[in-house]
Image 1 (cartoon, rainbow, N blue to C red):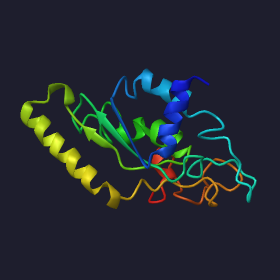
Image 2: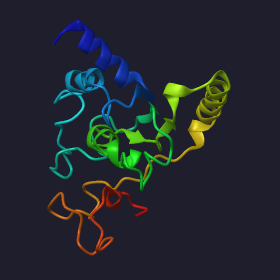
Image 3: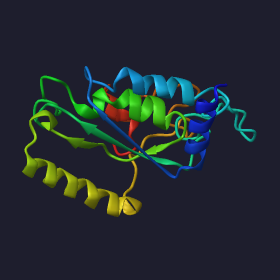
Image 4: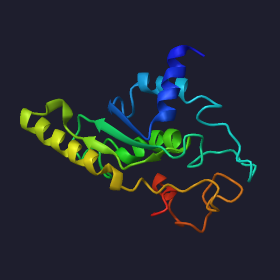
Length: 182
């Protein structure tokens, strides 16, 4: 393993809070960030372990990096309506579900609700000052925030499979069903 990858893994292993900041790029994180995840979150480091008591692979809340938290900070060139639940660009939580749930939660990292800075490409000095204050305020209180209540793979909601039991949030098929508060 290259020394820079080992160094990144060591930093991640020692971290309690990971802040992932990126511009929304073609409706997701930029490729360089995806490459970082591919290289750093390797099998045997971030996932791949088996819970000795249960004999199950440790993933979706129970991964090798359980106990850590992450804040995803996204700058977007769209307003809150166009990248909202009914927006033409899609809902930001759904667009970033592969990152929040499929990468971070998969390896056990609890994820806070997204921190999105809208219209970042046209921000004025006043907008930047407002967003800086908003982020500082959020970070000052992050210790008191609750992470997204994603369902754990081995808590009975997925019994024997990775498909949610049909009796839980019946009739819905959106990604929000994988939250305990759905």
